[in-house]
Length: 135
Image: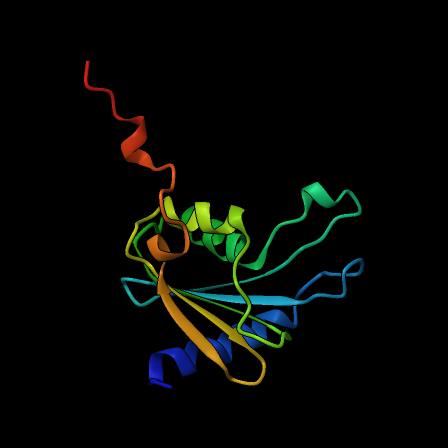
């Protein structure tokens, strides 16, 4: 494991401790590395109305964007799972909004991980290009 991933994993595991997951008991943490070196963290935040729940990845991204940072390098997501935890479809779409070449690292608490580019996890995605008009 390279230093960058090890560092992000450590931060995401710590962020996971802030998960508010009383309904699923499925705590997730995320660490988002921006191109300027800043790191934003996120944890999943549940709501009794499940549709209002927010995933760890989106929490980290929304924190970064709300602070004016939209240039992302890598996002790592971690949970206590058998395999490295994959992001849900909604998170994949939100990550892709900020670039097709963002690295995403799936991890678990055992230190296993897999690396992808977001475009590999969401092939054929609806993107900004689809909103361009050629009139």
